[in-house]
Image (cartoon, rainbow, N blue to C red; front, side):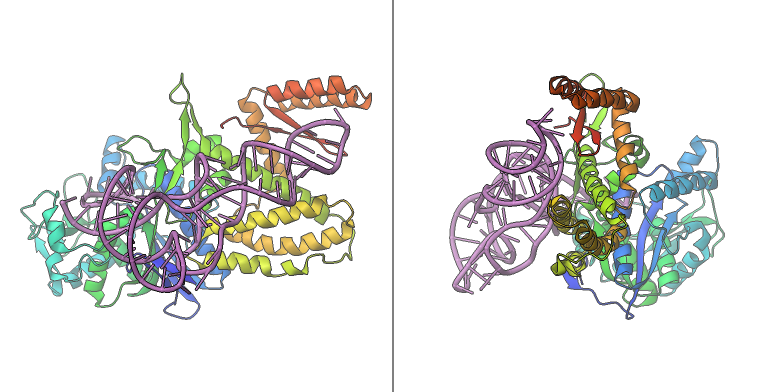
Length: 496
RNA sequence: GGCGCCAUCGCCAAGUGGUAAGGCAGAGGUCUGCAAAAUCUCCAUCCCCAGUUCGAAUCUGGGUGGCGCCUCCA
């Protein structure tokens, strides 16, 4: 297995500290608001990584924290006339709800910063005793110039950073790049006792303290968004390696951003969408599928289209396309299950060459830096094999069944590792089609009655009338497919 | 200004030294009452220039064009 390590800027062989064990820490959210698509991207990406490591039989300890003490939470609490604790609890619950919808597995441990203040104080004290940090009027700062390797993760040099300082020069700091480990208490803020008086921790120290507590001084994987490389992760390295004297993390993994029409999604640009917003219009699986169709390190672009008349009517072109693709995959699976569920048995395996080869291919894709995009590409090839087999006119049903079962037994493992394509196909398809019909102002009943009408016309060989009805439906966005024993309908999206 | 990432078919997107996955769209065939779906066939030499190499989309240097970080941020 090879993974791209931000620290070296290269793909490296993945060798765990302890055989078959992985310690993995991913920076969680600051719980002051609902999660946006960027969070979805990050946690879906690391969820796939987590699941794949488990698929490879690693015993994974996955730690994902909650930052529940922070300026923004305090601000939000003050605005809403509630406490920081209430704000953070609200959004921790919202986080869990969103993650569950996106099929993101719970982490092994989900520690909260406020429950680890003493661990942080301990680490800060250690840093002070090693002269890597200093107290200044109730604040404590990390002394960047005392840590010679500062900058090694983000590939920056201290003097280069200095020349570009935009940070406000603080009287308290010896060096403008020094960052806060402990902040002196201000009125109306959560505070804890410490050797330096009442106060609260700085942001970076929580991840160092909690990761070390649960995973040890050195652990295998640390992940997060690309935007965390500097300063957050850089500072973590400095704190942790400064305090423990040992290497902090073996492999640093960072996911790429979410772009909206090519520009970074951010609050300041006003182009951000919450997960909840998207879930109003799309099945969570569509979002997950779209995210995993891109490699986790690449930027992922949401193409959107605004309604000419109504700016708030936004069409997510990328998601519509993904929804179409997902439907056609479920169509295939639905047809496949019909054959697999057939009671006939004792068929012959028609394609012994596929035995084990599907999973081997999947592993080859995923072993290369968790390339879910390539894995999904490979999957498409096998979906074609399945469709071809299903349609093959002269092949015995029992042989088809035997062969499909073999293929599916492998696909099943892939599906559960990606946490995709695990819904009931016919339920999924009717859910999507009914939703789409609804958006067009059509009801299922109307469509079914039209189909009935057409069926009787067809029975009487009145093809002219039957075609007329089909045309009429099509003009309304309903596409019909005739099968020997039934008619299936679906709604065509017109986003192209 | 410093550091870094990216540029692959009309669109989306893998590939990171051995001769271009996959999806959408498109063309033609099979199937179909006709369609649709499915399937089969076809459809790119990889931004530009120079270099290294038996061999480069892949490595090096130089351009050009995007983007990001350097301030809270997944």
